[in-house]
Image (cartoon, helix red, strand yellow):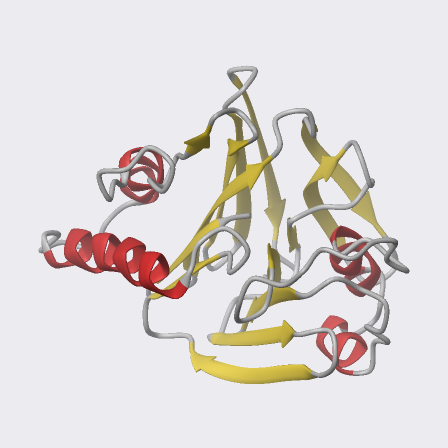
Length: 240
């Protein structure tokens, strides 16, 4: 599942995430949670109870895509749902350190992206080892799920993003990126940014997180039920 774009700003970033999933796996509106370390918000998957994107009041945001590098055989049962990993880490004092020491054995392959303090951390679990890379937080980035999009289609879809950026002389606004995520096209309904593969898998929602100097704001758009939800968190500290 998923198409993700990251756009950095002067005091934060804009992260936009299209969720591709079986339509029967409907999701709820945004959920609030908290502990002694942070408050955080996320849309909950009503099936496994997990989530695919989370933001907290320290300016940290994480999201998840299915698959690591290539499409893998689906071999259930798995020990734990991938969607629960984000909730596990945001319950910890230091989410990144928690993830670095997490036992991923028995969990289906995934790509986990973690954003904080002008840093993008990319973690890919291929079912045998965890591959970690730190990407520059001052550059734009694009990802899409390896389980749905083979390498050549990933390249085509990223090309749409790069072309779109080149046409924007001024920095795009959050609403501009939302429009891209609604309309980005490779000329194929099964592979466009909002895709539909005969109702077996389709883009069911778009979630956008805008992190600024003093606020993290999550907007959730349920494309199946035409429903929206917005939550804002006042940050405990300024983004660096």
